[in-house]
Length: 241
Ligand code: 3SL
Image (cartoon, rainbow, N blue to C red; front, side, top):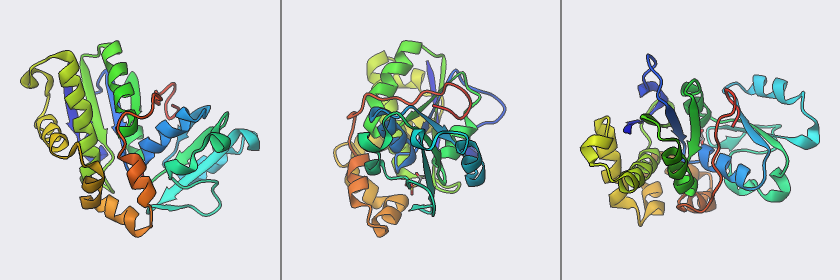
């Protein structure tokens, strides 16, 4: 297995596709997606365009759908939910399809959607993602961070490092064999430095600070939990997980 990490959708190659691609948006899109499936959500359908989301979801019965829209960290007016994983309770999401559009996370998923296997991972479901990758034995794996509007996100790289760290341990491969690019070595080092203090890391991160300004303290704590969910969003058709 060769692993490549790309910090943002913009840095992700467009001239080739891997066997398996994993989108990471720890704060908060991929954490929310894993939480929705863990709470019994039927599926997740991602959109970059809010109007398109409204148009497609309109065809679903109102009691079988939930519309989640986030821009700039806040909930889009008229949508059922923003992008807080804490709103995704069993009572709210069980049996429903989540139609979701967020600033960066949905873009990361869309840029890898032609890969044969597409997953959405975060700290909360890191172990489930690693276990699934190992069961599939892909030759080439990409992890794509969502970043923020084209720039690097500390928390996504730390999570990519957590996945890489676990793959390294479980495959027993030497680092130089597993790492397909320098980003893998850097991400593992970042994760190793902060693994016991992820909340503190989020407080250093620009998007963490943005969420703190929006009073999302509990979201930050939730997103920093490691391996608490068994749920793994796996793409079943382009844009649907
Ligand atoms: O950018 C995104 O996709 C979101 O996850 C951002 S937020 O955490 O909902 O603000």
